[in-house]
Length: 310
Picture (tube, rainbow, N blue to C red):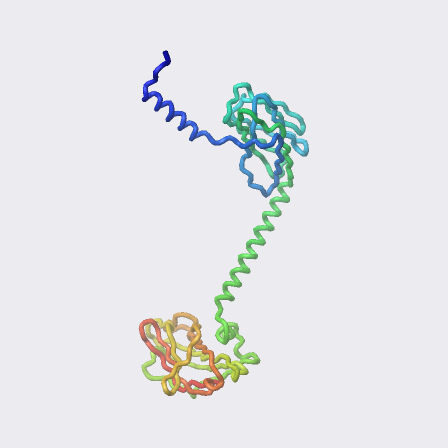
């Protein structure tokens, strides 16, 4: 009469087997009996899994003799019969070596060259084994690798500096504002005019207008740019930072401004601050007379009248 197992015991057995299967890593595919492994100083290779089986020896053959003093670490121990030669390591699993069982083998080379070590995981397989692993170690002296690291770091620093320079240049405004920032406003091709007493600065301005200059590009008949540079001082008011600007004609029409350029907050008792206002203008527009109004985030204004261009 067949034995009858309680349902609870069957459930426990099923769950235990399922849990063990879930915890056990999958077996390697073991498609070929031979493997080739290239070890280079640059590689950050993780441990390579190699199929083994008690019926077959697995031999690691190196492209050059192992350096004297090379250490072979096997964890756990006593799971293989081993045979070693100048360029060969052979492992024969014990008869009770189980499918899925894993043993870590690490070689630590003693010649001071890179790569300094390599690790293999020998995985038990129920039917197959890799019988030969050809290991090609492309060794380089540590001094050479260290020099390469130093050169790479120097190149990285140079790239960082170049990136910082490019970011700074990209951060510099373009057009007439960029030329002013680079100190090129008085070069050939850029016409300038010191506005001096030609302009009028309104009483009640938040800051003092010390000087003003206007600029234009040549060939404005086909369209170009004009700009106004205003030098401001703070006689004792709270710090002032330009937040907006308007350049309007006698009838109130406003020219479309390009993004403002300025030197930052203007504090009392410090050097003059600078604001550059630039617009795309036609030759006809550049002949006009304008009023420039600047303001900060709190609405404190600076108004400069009778602005003309060269």
